[in-house]
Length: 335
Image 1 (spheres, rainbow, N blue to C red):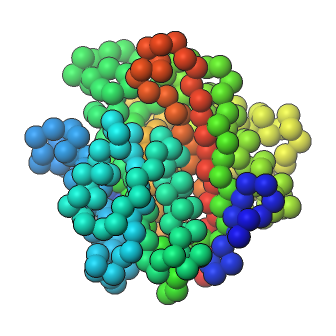
Image 2 (cartoon, one colour):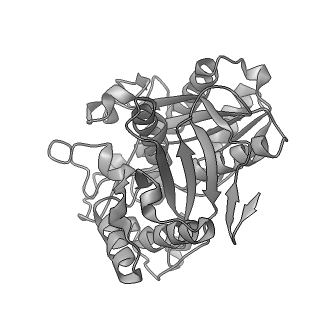
Image 3 (tube, rainbow, N blue to C red):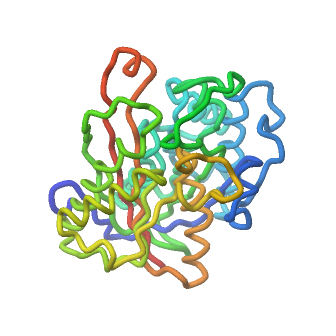
């Protein structure tokens, strides 16, 4: 049901019946390692290309999420997903092997919450009983497509981020036990003229702020309504900028624990990740792994996940275009 200008309230409170996270070896060395379901010891995941490795991560996450929900894939009506790789091939090829009716979406690194919001809407409207939302990223595929192949050894500025190798999936159901998806706010595209693909955190920060402010306005609440508000991958450059923008706009963001998934997944003292993490898999594995486990332990009652995405392509960058950005917010509450 529409709430305000650009938000949905899910009156039937769709349930996260099962989730799963699968990550690579570098993520398994970080502080959240115990919160992931599967940690691969090899970046290639036993595959012959980075793209096939990324697809394998996603297939494993979706299958495990369905298993954790106590379902079979034949009981799932729809799969909603997307990724960063050319024409979202990781999801499209995974959907081929999963054989679940498929809706492919692209929101760059905001895809985790875009897919979850759409999955919840399908369930809340009665269009489905079980829907899987999923996304993935791989460090080597993203670097090759958007910057330089990792084998090239290109130096990076301190504003650059490190793409997460990982996949996250969630089964959204019309009933059952688990945290509820209660609200969502669909973001609009915000472009402040930044053209540097090594500074995406700064490019995405205004979009995150715009969506969070729209969410608070549409639901007439303050940040303190949530125990946690987590952005997707603004990391060390974009997240402080977002906090500064909230102060300028008079939004009391310090009422809540305001954090960023890209700041949580790696150990900055031991892992060389420049400004922090990025990628579709970043917000997916941190949310479906770490944050939901904290919610199940009773440490979080309400959280707002605001996945952020930079909607550039190699072609748009090469033609000198600035980077349009977007953020989608989904509220998850303990049962």
